[in-house]
Every structure is written in structure tokens, then in C-alpha cells.
Length: 405
Image (cartoon, rainbow, N blue to C red; front, side):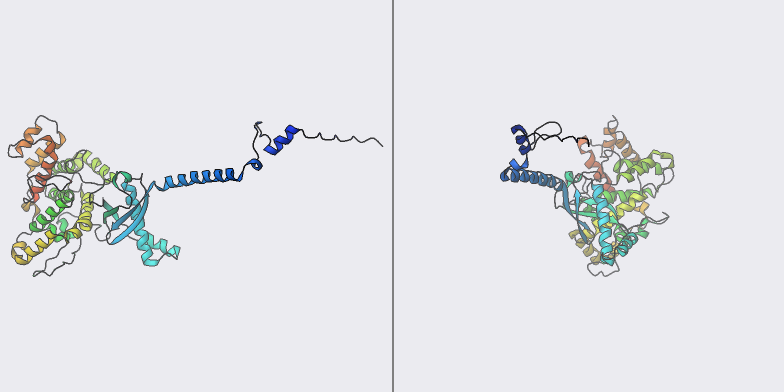
């Protein structure tokens, strides 16, 4: 029988090997690693605490990057949370979704997921036309949340819904007022069948004057003036429509416009595209904008106006002298507010060429031959436009503030 090889006897571990084993030995790179057997309980607790603090700090850093807001949409109040680095447009998208979810939940509940989603799909969405901060100042859609709002701020939105959508008629042969929002019940009895709808208020020079004064105090005069200028555009003939379209663009929408109206970037791009095709301009250019402006007036301005002292004054005037009020109905926009195309062209020239040597002369010609300082230009143009539709407006107003001189 052949001899089997005797397996080698393993060497006794040296003192060094024993030490390495107890201390954890060496890793693949030959670096000694310390065994957990040699870490004290206090050290382990400290390491774990440090890791927890680092993790919590990271989570907290993410949390403070969000902002909670209270958003009023009509009679509903929504609480939303949004990354404060997002824009106001992102807030609008979030509010729109939350509003639809809330309405669907009120209708069918949330227990049946299929029914809930079906209700959301069938729901008529709102189209947010304006966002106001707690001071009732309109916010640009491009503004970053953290730059214009604070944590727990209250925000109010104006919007279009099934009531206000489609205010612009398919044909402009009749006045836009024929399709305005339905009447809002008056808070006091009237001796004559007056109503307090937006249509009624915009169709009477006395009511319009009160509404315009209130708009000035509420920082929404720009929206009302734009609506009136678009109405004036409807009265233009083929020879003047292009000039009036350019005037509206430069007054309300161009870069550095003196009476800026806040609209979405998509709507602004659409307007610019149309203005660039100057030979194709017609009275429908600003229909979509006017629809949004009317929705803002209907859902934001009108409810506030009806709670104001100016509305109380208007109601008293109607009750005391109803016949006088009726004589101030606007039966023809062009007769009540005739277009001064000579002045419109001067204003367009001033707005498109503000640094031209002839601009000071043109401005003076619009101000009783009195020079207008460059720093006063915006206030002057705002007052000039406002006084065209309401002579009671002060000769000089300050844009975006309550300062009236």
C-alpha cells in the first residue's frame, strides 16, 4: 500500500497575528482596521448620534426648502405646500390641481378611487388669471416663490371657471357686455330693477367711475383700463385698428410698459407673435387677454367692491336719483369714449422711442405744453389713460401704491 502524504501541521499564530486578529486584521489594501470589539459603548453611541444628527440636518434642510401657503379660491381656502424655489406659475399649477381634487372629493369622496378619478376628469378646471399676496399686490407669474412670499402667507387668486369662461362672444358685432357674467344679487333693495353684475357696472359711466376709483385703491386699475382700451379697439375702423393695436401693446405688454398687466409667458409670446405680423392685426388680437381680465374683475375686484364704501355710495346715488343714473347708460362705447387717434399715435411714438429728441415735445403737447419729467412718465401716462374714461380720477396718480396727488 503506498504511503499517504502527511498533511502539514499549521504554524502556531505569532503574537503579531494574534494582535491583528483581535484588532480586526487588515483590509484588502493592507490597512489595519480596528475591530468593533475594541470600540467602547460610549464611542459607538457618539458615532450613532453624530450620524443621526447629520441625517436629521439633511432632512431639515430639505423641509425648510418648502413653504406652506393658505390660498383663497372664491369661497374655498386651500392649504398647499410648495418648494420655495419654484415660480408663481408652478404655484398656479399646484392650486389648480388641488382645487379640482378638493371639488371631486366633496362630490364623491375619496374611498372609491375609480369614482374619484372620474370626478376629477369630469370637473371643469379653473384657469387662474392673477395671484395676489396678502397685501393684495399682483405677483408676476415668473417670480420665484421665496422672493415674493413668506411662510404661512395668505394668497388670493382670481380665476376663470364655468361662469366666467367664454365671456368673449363669437361675434363682436354686439358689445362684450351682452355676454358678461350673470348678475350678483344686490345687498340692498333698489327702487328700480338695478343689478350689480359686472355687465351692469361696466355699462354705466357713473358706476364705472366708482369702480375705477376703487380699482385705483385696490391696485387693479391696470386690468380695468386694459379692458376699456380693448373695448375702444372694437370701435376702430380698418384705417386705425393697427395703430390702436400697437398702442395697447406698448402701453400694457412691451418691456418697460408704463401700465404693465401681468399675464402668463405663453400668452405674452402669443401677443408678441401677433404684433410681429402687423399686416394681419385685427380687433380680435386681445380677445383672450380680455377674457382673463374680465375674469379677474369678476372674481377678485367685484366681490371686494360690493363690500366697500364706494359701492354703498353708488347704491345711495341710484336710489336717490334713479332716472339720472339711467341717463348715464353706455349705449354706444364709441360715442361715450371717442377715440382720439391723434393722441393715440403720439403716445405710441413716445412709448416706442422714449429717448428720441422729439419725445419731450410730444409729452408737453399732451400736458398743456408743460414739460413732463422722465421720472414722472409712468404716473403721467397712467393718469392720462385713466382720466380718458373717468375725468374724476386725479390728474396724477402713483402706479402700484396708494399715493395720490
